[in-house]
Length: 261
Image 1 (cartoon, rainbow, N blue to C red):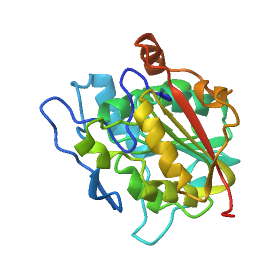
Image 2 (tube, rainbow, N blue to C red):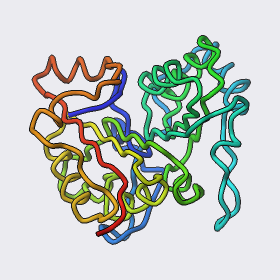
Image 3 (tube, helix red, strand yellow):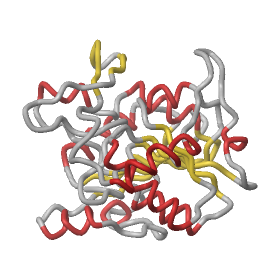
Image 4 (cartoon, one colour):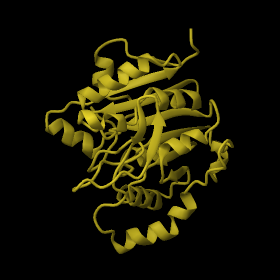
């Protein structure tokens, strides 16, 4: 199952460990594991000159600066254009989905969190080519960004094709946990949506189990087709096409922020 990746699947807060077992560079803490390293390598193949230039010139313009611990950012104040709402995409991969949504929704501010440099430069090109002014980037640990967001400040959060960390001993690295879902629910406005996609059945099930334990999130599916077909505004991605070609149909899960019963 999946949601919004390009040539390689995005990772909630990061990307998979690279060949040879690159060390993880981000660690979170919660009840499902004393330490949870969400992603591995920060950089893949060598960047081209134009990509390096955008990293130097454009990324500093788009990059968020987080306040000291305990303080919060004002999401709508991050953008130089008027915005009606703010969305967050955690682990945007190459930015294909994020850029498409930003283009379609010019009055929606979209924050993208992605530590993988090669993915960031792809989004920077899309922002540059499309003159997108409603995009901001956080290229570090997504959990730090979530902690800096005020309660009820977002209308959507996306987690598309996160790294499944398939081995049993690695599963504590998965971004989805009781703690991370509680944080996502905290930052969502009442009625806001959390959308998750994966081409890995086990991760979809993992997410459903943990979402069921979060009283602030309600699964919106009413029939099986609701989680086997993409959302109405889903632009499609190259990663999704590859997953389908490989016989891995995606799951599209959507949860609404509700008040606990």
